[in-house]
Length: 231
Image (cartoon, rainbow, N blue to C red; front, side):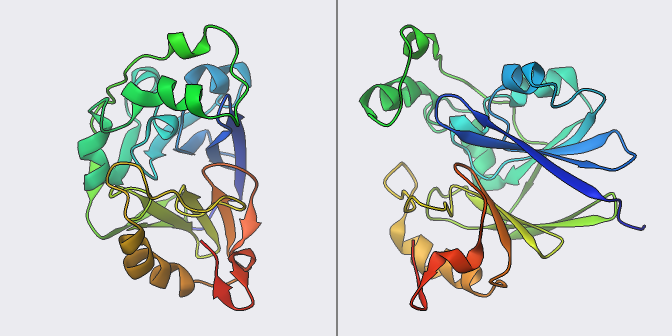
């Protein structure tokens, strides 16, 4: 099947600037979502008007990357959620997906300007189980395009990266443009990051464009300073 021209759009979700990506093909109503956090935000920006999501790809289990899954599944019952099996075991538990502590995290983080009442509105969230879970890596073909999904532990045990057509990387929180990787949350491991994940990333083409879970897009070469990988 010939690949249809692909368009990548995104919304940066309030209040933690989490990026939800919408991938659609020219002349088709089908689309793929990566890390949807706010269903209301997708609707208010008309991101899904005329579209029918076929897959939801989750880079990891944390609440700010899965918060819209249940509403999307109700609105689009044929849409399939794909993630690692380690991620799948956590998204269904409000403590393991960190939603039970999300309000506290916002309250103690001085980076965010949170309006009155927002923190109190955050409730523990139990996500529906994934439709497709995998260990190691997985190849997903869609509309003539190829998604290579592979486990990248470090930020969390359930973290993955997603390579689209060999040139685009959806990194979740495994790689960010400015901020160092956070490995201090439950199931995070700095050792796993350096021993398992970094070697995989260093094998990739430096011209790979990275679409991270937070912040602006960049190229993989930007993570190298004087030839050394910067985490």
